[in-house]
Amino acid sequence: KPRLRPPILSSDLLSLAMDREEFRRQGKAMVDFIADYFASFRQRQVVPDVRPGYLRPLIPAEPPQAGEPFENVMADLERVVLSGFHAYYPTANTFPSILADMLSDAIGCIGFSWIASPACTELETVMMDWLAKALGLPPITSSGGGSGGSGGGGVIQGSASEATLVIFLSARNLAIQRLQAQRPEAQQQPSLALSRLVAYASDQSHSSVERAAMLAFVQLRKLPTDGKRSLRGDTLARAVAEDRARDSSLFWLLITTLGTTNSCAFDNLAELGEVCQSEGLWCHVDAAYAGASLICPSTDTSPTESSFHPKQLADSFNFNPGKWLQITFDCSALWLKDSSKVVNTFNVDPLYLQHEFSGLVPDYRDVHWLHSLVRQRLHCTTAALADSVGSAFSLAEDLVRSSRSYGIEGLQSYIRKHIRLAKQFEELVTADDRFEIVEEVLFGLVCFRLKARLGSRLYRRIRVDGRIHLIASEFEASDTFFIRFAVCSEFCEAADIRYAYDVISELANEVLSKK
Ligand SMILES: *Cc1c(COP(=O)(O)O)cnc(C)c1O
Image (cartoon, rainbow, N blue to C red):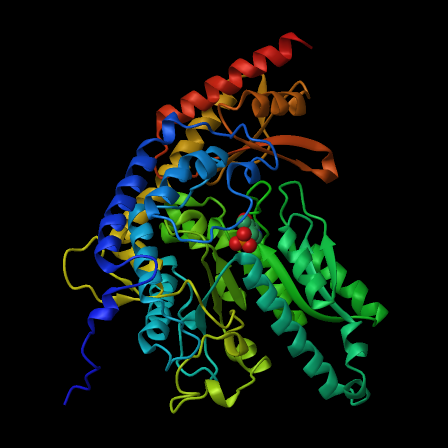
């Protein structure tokens, strides 16, 4: 017999701020507003003119005593918010993902345990398995089931930085437990073990690696890279041998990067994985941006496949679907070969979070998978927003949205298009002898500079000009300043690439003529 809730009362239709009919009206208006906003991108300034502190004078100093009509709020959007908005974003933001977010907010599911919303947990598990298959990750990374069990599994984290921190804290605790098992005196003094922990990463790793080391209170050794900004196995092996000789360190973690933020360089995972296996280090792969390219068959994307491929050598792997897979920020997919390493190290089970299936199903809350307890964004969503009927729930909201609305083929063609556009820009720059490319172009990023060493002057000129927005960076070791050209938007076309090149070329002429 179906268990029914009490019938809807007419008072349910009323709410202090907005009733249901008004919501229908305003909701439709909001969708129109969003569609118009997307249509207006090309008329908007790339970089806003506003100065710090611009916003405060535009709104009243005091919060309103009485509520205001929603129209008033909307009327202020352009004047207050969009005037100070940066066209840098949105990047991986698409209509289906906006609709998915709307629904997930409406359902408001808080999936801190399986029982809190079985659909939420199960869909996340299945979506992570789908995604692992789509990327061709080794089957071991797929879910084995129980939260306390061994076996692989994926979990959605908010950001790559969070994923790295999860790995740091888990690997640290495992190392401390291992040391305490070997040396009973360390049990009395956990700080003794802490002071001996060393993590390794390349000097090109993302700043979040350094921050995770700080938060985890462990030393981070940043190892030098080769001429292609790649961390090699022999460099790691040497560092480990040095630390071993001093006996001052317990080795426990390597963070490798596939697709560095700076220049999209690749550590040599094949070599590093082997060193990690023989030395007993946890090998984590941070592929926040480039990992998405694995959705394409290797032949047509990555010439670095030989170093990219042996993912079986890694213990954990993360990438951000929010960077390059058409999913709204924030979403970072993390897989572990042995999820118990994370689950068991931080398992605290208060009574109020227990349920009759505890231990048999994953509970993706922080005590188990270290995600923040209230997994606010991983809510329900209709899977098939772009499909016509059959709106099954999707919890790993955007993943479903993305994989079902676009399909694997759609996502592949999106990745290929960005690579093609980056190649187009590379060709324009290569054909122009004022410039040089500073890093092999593999994906959607082109790092280039003025041969005349006036790169920073050109860069400042581009910033002031404001027609396009680029980010500069440098290789500190070789004192090389360069400009990064990144293809980000779904709506970017060949004509945009040509336009950007023409702007850069024109400004380079100015800079060079004033030399
Ligand atoms: C972007 C990036 C990060 C940081 O990602 P967040 O999700 O913003 O924390 C980390 N590592 C690499 C390689 C990146 O490209």
